[in-house]
Each structure stands twice: as C-alpha cells, then as structure tokens.
Length: 267
Image (cartoon, rainbow, N blue to C red; front, side):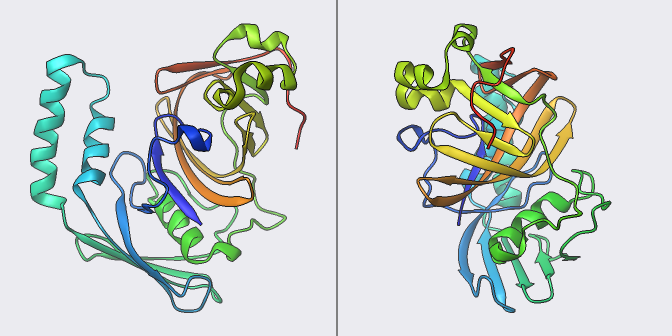
C-alpha cells in the first residue's frame, strides 16, 4: 500500500501526479506539523510489524511551504527560507519508529525526541480522534503496518467529509452534462475538475475511488485520510481542503462548487 504526501490537490489521475509514488511518508503530523519519510518496513500484517523513518529536508520544506502559503512574492520566499533554516537545524535527520502487533491491535510509536506513545486498535467508536488528540498519525501508522486490520466494525461511526453529498465541479457549466459527456470533454483532466462525495465515498469522476477513513478540522482547514483504488492498485491518500461552506471548498487554487444534482451514480 502506498501513502502519498499531503497534497494541495487531493488526487489526480496517474498522468497528473505531482509527487512521486515511490516515496512513502511516515505519518507524524496531526494537524499542522510535518511528516517523515519511511526508511524501512518489515513484517507488515504480522505480530511483529515495524516501520522506521527519518525526517528529511523535503518533509520540512513541505511543512514550511504549506504554513506560509498565504504569503506572496519575496515576503513568502523569505518566510519559507527562514522557516527552513530554523527547522532543518533542529529536526532534519531525526529518527522515528513504530511497531505493531496486528494480532492484538497494539501500536507503539516513538517520536523524534525518543518519546513513546501507545494505542489499542480498533479504537472505540466514541474515542477522541481529533487533531488535538494526536491520534490521526497513529491511525495512519497502524493502517500501514496492519492494512488488513483497519476495516471499521459494523457499529463504528462512519468518517465523512463536512460537505453535502453530490457532484462538485470547478466549472458550473459541467453541471449541465452527464458523467459520460464530462469524461468525453475533459478526458483525464476530469480528475482535476470533479469531486463526487457520497457519504464516506469520494471519487474524482475518472479513475480514482476512495473511502474516507478519518477527518479532522482546524478552522476552515479540512484534513483527511482515505483508502483508494485506481486500476486495482490500493493507495493511501492524505488530503487538505479549505472549507468555504457546506457546498463549496477549495483545493489549492481551484474552487469546487456543488451542482444541484449528483451526476455520478452512488457507489
């Protein structure tokens, strides 16, 4: 299973991927911070699953660029450069690790300061999984180490994005077309201009189909994780959207608005 970095544009068709899929992230970020990069994984799905990672300059660069995204021109560049100077000296090269017993559901995570934290899966349906709880990265780590153990129980609360079900597009004229007409017009660019939300299900109207497994919010920033499939290949995605209202959100510089109807059939 692959894990893509936090994308400013959630998911794209394979011809439009903006990050390498061969580099796997080590989930560390709960709300605002940075992730690491996986160095090795062994025993996934067993009672001795383990993962080792390190914090790289690229991890810190993503963090600095994301947290100073509101700047512009020279001011933005200066802020990012200052952030990099501060962060690299203190965090670059730090080691992190996680181990899991997939039989018992026990996870142990050791952060870059050597501090450990444990979690027992599956989590209770009423457990705190917010950013403040620090649970989102532990959930993601367990999903990597024990991928067959993360299916929610029938009584668990379904994760979903804070938006109404329906089809969301960047160009309102697309709302007059059916799914086939949109695909004929846009081709693989459909994935850049369409999102379909149906409960915990999320698609890009083209090749990618996902199930949202966790959602957290800080202000208008909606961050989520989803298990996806494209052409039969499983992928783990971490997204960051900006909520404008219940029927409008922004991904990077693109604004998506809900059509008055759902164009893609429920799946």
